[in-house]
Length: 277
Length: 253
Image 1: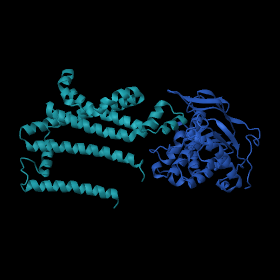
Image 2 (image 1 turned 90 degrees about the vertical axis):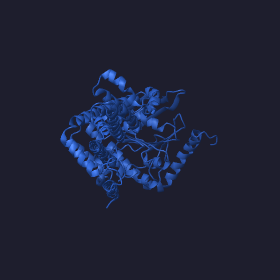
Image 3 (image 1 turned 30 degrees about the vertical axis):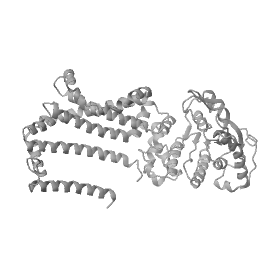
Image 4 (image 1 turned 90 degrees about the horizontal axis):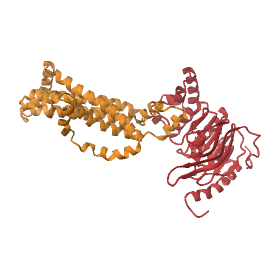
């Protein structure tokens, strides 16, 4: 694969359809004193785009995801998904994968994956078809009857991804899903995620603290400032849609991560209260 | 043989060995039979007393009293625990009371309870309930505290309402603590009601044991003691097996 040049936001996107958008979104947690966690943020996610968000710890990345998912209401501004406002409820068509292990330990892998479908009253034959597909897709076929605590951390996270996948979300939000995994497993999980993204053609927003993960997986990367989180840079990676973890060997990959780090370094120093930059 | 079977076998051998030793000490006269009956004599006495029917009404009385106190303590304990969990201010106010609750000797309230409820099973049910309910309440609080917030987020992601979130996510997530609370509630209900009958009542197994003790009727006393011991052990073992089956899924194989 040829090294691809970095480009300015929007330079190469062919008039995309806006799938989800945030306009002037701010999140302030009440208290004394109130905590201004996020924004104001403006962001358009194009349909089918893979967008990654990086930023220093505590900058409001997860808050951004919660607001976009409808798990938390914005204090100000407007969030829309497929043109409809998102106001404190998770809209149909949105799936979230969290950083923490969110598999249900009392359910088998298959039952975990089928959880949402059963609650939604989907036909049992259709549940079986979708669960079998998702379990196979995530490489869990041999563990379908196992319980989560019999699996490794990476496999449990795959269970959670499969549980989201079977709901056929059109917007997938991932909150540092590989944060607890070792580097090798993260790269391989990244490949699986790219495969999933291509197959489902969903729009993906990935929150991560790993620059290489953001650079490898996404079409665009948004670098956030220290709290209150705002985008200080939006970088188009320019990678082809058919990509995988071998990208890390590309010459352009180093330049991309260096550009991201140049922003993140200064903001991380601010976030930990240092005076040096 | 796996580790679990070895532990089980060692436990069984220990119990059998202790019973055999006791039998030997009693049969050889090392232990005076007026002080302690040999285990085989205890078992024979138990069978005889139970088969005679002379304590059937007491057995029914004790077990029904325990069952009512236990069921009420589980239901109220879970409801009160959920309420305190939902209202943090109320919980903060109640915390010191809950922490010092078991320092209170419940039996001192017996006269007041008799004045309220009369000379029937209700005062002892109230004592059993008081002893068991708070154990259930505290276990419920512990269980609810340990429900990972991310699971509640998953429930919201699947657009579950409050009731479905409660029954499909919260209760299963808190189940190990609820199970512990149930075991404690059963034990506390049994202990307090048998003790209450022993000291305060004119009916029930506790009363019959006390009566046999005061009448120097060792055979009946030890027979009934063994019966109570066996029943409590069987009930706790059943709960333990259920708990282990529940936990086995949640711990790495």
